[in-house]
Length: 429
Ligand code: CMC
Image (cartoon, rainbow, N blue to C red; front, side):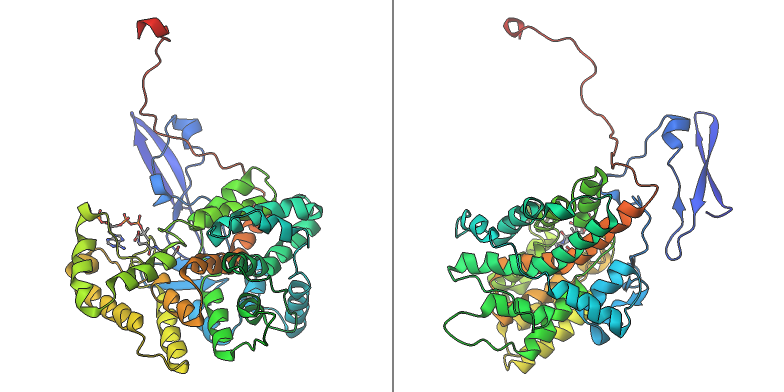
């Protein structure tokens, strides 16, 4: 709280709105008492000007293109850290000591297998189901398999649920993939790293030995880190809203996965690669730029634009470097999709439409190129985002449960329906 107070004048009366001071970012007007005192709501569809909670986890400055996890810049973490270390940081607030990291890694690693009965659950799905559809179902069903960690009032159960989800989401996503291609499920291998184990569960087959490429393992780990948390985005807000009713953590994360699936959010990485393929060659770019500028086409450049970043998305910068590195190391730097992506970015960033609307490549613009080079089909891109974001969702959910000011989320509305009227009997309509 600061000494500053904003004044609202309405119908000849003045109302004081306290100004809250964040550690970083713009001041926040406290309107919690406004309805009680002035009998008015505020109107903010899409929450463009509304803070829905206090949080100490992630900070974004969209004007300068800055992303901090617990204060640490994403660029430093992407260069020096690992996904599991970032998981610890997001969950517990500080970088771990060597002993804490070893203990955390051990705890996650020991939970990578899923209940054997879950295999039958998978078999109920059609083989051609989108892996995100399967994941929403299976993660929601975790509450039925692990009901010893669904009591949200027990800190120990909350901790076990968190570790279980961080550990099992890669296994569940890999099983969804294996099921869709008709191959046997591959059990986790605990000697491997978090990212290496995921690649192993996706690409190993019983018929031959699979050796995890260190290049791909590092690239996958970096993709996971870059996606690990992103403040109060749509899926995280969904997790918080679901959790605000006291729902169990597995149900909340399943809700987050469902929200992430949309093409304006996590589904953009799949949509972006499909768009790059559709463009196909550099000479067709102007046609697609024109389409994106034409509102009546309904077409948007996927992987472009962001609600918060109005300068650049720092994750996209790291991802672009990673795409160059991975494709270079794999000897496929002349990949036509990468050429199309780079040229599309160059042309769009010189175009008045994109410049004036501050539309820049976002994290999804280059991630699909890396994932395809690794051998993933486009349908697995969003599940990989979901694995990576799981720790962010859980950290935010845990923070919310521990918040004494937490209330059930219940937005109000600007009602524009009919006035009160009397029922009309069927024969008089
Ligand atoms: N291509 C063409 N025009 C665009 C685009 C785009 N990708 N994005 C925004 N615009 C235009 C939009 O038409 C609007 O124009 P006008 O002001 O004339 O009506 C203006 O830019 C502002 O757009 P908005 O939809 O009001 O902005 P928003 O903050 O509500 O939406 C967004 C942000 C990310 C949903 C949007 O930029 C978009 O749909 N991008 C494509 C999908 C995408 O790449 N999503 C991934 C986001 S990053 C990963 C994640 O967090 O999930």
